[in-house]
Length: 326
Image 1 (cartoon, rainbow, N blue to C red):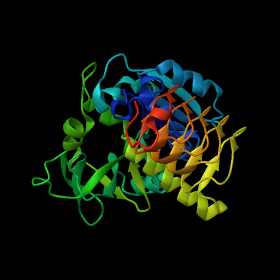
Image 2: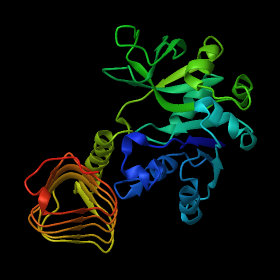
Image 3: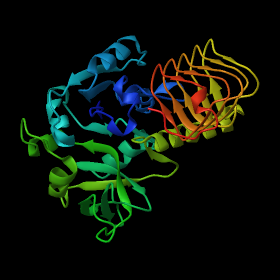
């Protein structure tokens, strides 16, 4: 079985980190976001197609070295932005049967094997995963009947127009015949143009519980890291993680991921993602922040709610300040 992972886009909301690294390779709990998605696939998915464009060579290089547990991984170029439907149509040659489509920037607790069982039991043509949110304005919303059929679909409504808080959670199962609805070589939105055509033709929604995080912004990226560290704490007793060959003086604070080859003198750090190769001098205070690759933070610096670009030196001019560093 194939899975198409939508991993294109420029990751503009994650800048400045994505100036140098494509968003799918940004680390959560010391593992690239895309690896979390691939690792969530059931064993019966043996063919993975990444629909990509921005910094595609970095993705190809990563997957040349990645141990994929027997899965074949194709990184396929999308020459120009084609929308969600166009991106799937662009990889049609790799698809020969029922297939998954998954957004690469979603961290969730969905059980994809159970989702597939749900789909097959209903002899469906298409299905999307369903999640409840307070504000549906940034998502597609839909209504379900008592057996899970989608009866209405509405993409990114205004708050006063939304008829539901059940959103499209970014995991699809489709039959190849759905590809026939997508015109060749055009920019097509699966959500706006294709899904409405499927209503009444075997289109279902799969509801699940646990957690669901769209990792499109620094705040949600930190939320995903924190959520996975909470689960790690339940299993291992720790709510932080330190990568290989890293030195940390004193205790690491709550919900902190430290990458490999880092040196961190005694400092106060909480709810932070620290990429590889970072040096932090003593007496620093870092909260709710993401620190890019090979950053140097000098003694006594105070950062809160910051995103620090790769290779930046944060000097003592920032001492006792709270700011966003780019």
